[in-house]
Each structure stands twice: as C-alpha cells, then as structure tokens.
Image 1 (cartoon, one colour):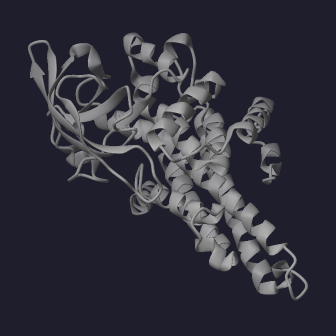
Image 2 (image 1 turned 90 degrees about the vertical axis):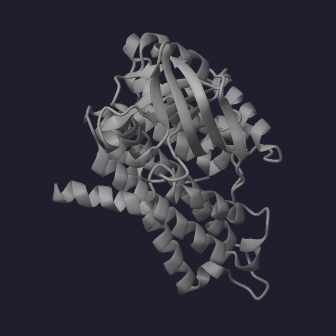
Image 3 (image 1 turned 60 degrees about the vertical axis):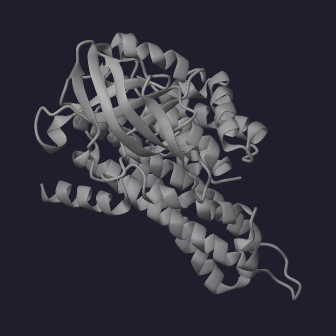
Length: 380
C-alpha cells in the first residue's frame, strides 16, 4: 500500500480525500488492464473511467459555473499512474485534449464536454509539428480564410490519441503577427475531410500516437476557439494547468517504484538477513523517499495555487513538472538497480516503469524548456 499520509497535508479538503479513496478502490478492482491491443485498451479505459464518473474531473463547463479543480486532476493522475500508466494516459488526454475548450470554448464547443467527460468521445491535443517540437512559436500549419470559414494545411506529429480520437484541438498559423502572436486554436472533428492519419508511431512505452496530415481541412467559423491570434495564449494557459498533472503522474510512478523496491529489499535472502539490512541500500531508499516527498510538495503546491485563483502558475507548474519527472526517473532507476537482474526482465513492474517514465520528461515541454521557463520567471 503506497504512503497516503500526504492526503493530510493542508493542500487538501475532505472532498479530495474522499475522491482519492474512491479511486483507489476502483483501481484495485479494475487495473491494470491488458496492454496487448493498445488502441482497444485506451478506448475501454476511457469508457470505464467515464462510466465510473472519474472523467467528470477532466474538464469543466464554465457556462454552468464550473471550474477545473487541479488538485483533483493531480490526485487522479497520481493514483492511476501508480496502478497503470496507460490508465493515467487515457484520463489525462481527455483533460488536455479538451483543455482549450474548458478554458476558452463557446457554449457550442463546450457541448463536446458532455461526451468527453462521460467517455463517449475521445479527445486529442494537436500542437507538436515535425519541425517545431518544443518551439510552439515556429508552428507552420496554416489556417487560411475561406468563404465558409477556415482551411487548414500542414502536419502534426506525436499526437497522443492520434488515430483513435473523435476530435482534435489543433493549433495553426493565422498570421495576425509574426511568431507566437499569429497562432489560433481550432476544434477539428476526426471525420473532417482532408484529415488523414499519415503514420502511427510506436514508442518504448506503447501509447496511441500518430502523425496527422491536414490537406485543406475545411472548418466553419464556429470551430475557432477564442479569437484569431490567441492560439499561443490558449496553448500556454492549458499547459499551465496540465503541467503539474504530468508531475503528478510521474509522482505516482515513483511511489510505485519505491513500493516495489521496499518489497524487494525486505525479502529474506538465502544467506540470512535482507538487502534492507545494508546501510548502502538504506541510503538509496532514503534518497528515493526524499525525492518522492519533494515532488509531491511541488506538484500539490502548484495545483493548490491554481485552485486558489492564481491567474497563471507558470513558474510553479514548470518547477513541479521538471522536478517530479526528473526525480521519478531517478527513483525508478534506483528501484531497478535494487532488483538486480530482475530489474531489466521484461514484464516486471520496475522494467515497465522504466519505459513508462521516460516520455514524461519530454512531452508538454521538455525538461530543458522548463528550466528556461523557471529562469525567465525568476529573472523577470
């Protein structure tokens, strides 16, 4: 059983503890799932999380007076990632994919939330491009005015849920100004004419990923999220909210790795005693526990600050994502080392975690990007 004493920290309210307990029970009963067919597994997870009511927390309908609770988002991602990182992925993409609609969408666009929050539709966030990875301001996909709205042309890559999503929030250049000030955001249904899945991408920890080709995709004026030229602001506002949740997912994986390591070093050895009797092993465990708690403090500080009404938490979010993902990589590596040869044996928990954690240091702003964000904030 993972340490849950952090739920008594002053960041949380009784409703958060109730949510964590309910989700823990659900996870024990339903996770992990079979990852053999990743597309099918993700679709089933979205449906199951929707039916259980947990996807309600992935978005909020501002028109109904709702607001995102970032602490709940983080608690859910941490718990799911500890039990099954693919379940975390399925939940997270419903929130990230619809983040722009939650924060800036029109009433008509927010109608999609009822489907994504009940597991009836799968969402995706289409920002990354082949030539503009972490440099969002260099986005090249074009959105040109057409008689009936807009026409989008370009490519997006490493798009999570690409190929299984029912709708995409896509960012394209509308040209109001150079660089970041000339981008806009659009809601694009997956059945839009001109949208094709150019390539399915396989990675070390399987997830639905794809490269999208947009060949004159026609969208109506109603597809525009916010105003023309606000795409960069929208994207950064969404990442402000969801970067701490990436840290939370990493935290969940780190907690699982620490738990696996503790179980391993407590096993009786053939020659008597346990690995835990050795001071060097105890030192590794102490470092792992320290990193887990420090990551948790940064993650839930950022989430708490946003829930208290902070308009932006750019610095706090970047610190949470950077530290939690880097620390989780170190904790998982240490757990694998303590397992010896079994640590690299395919199918063991720590071997799977070793593959699962790596992408979190890249997506939604790579670690070096977070360092730049933090430096600019403290120099500002």
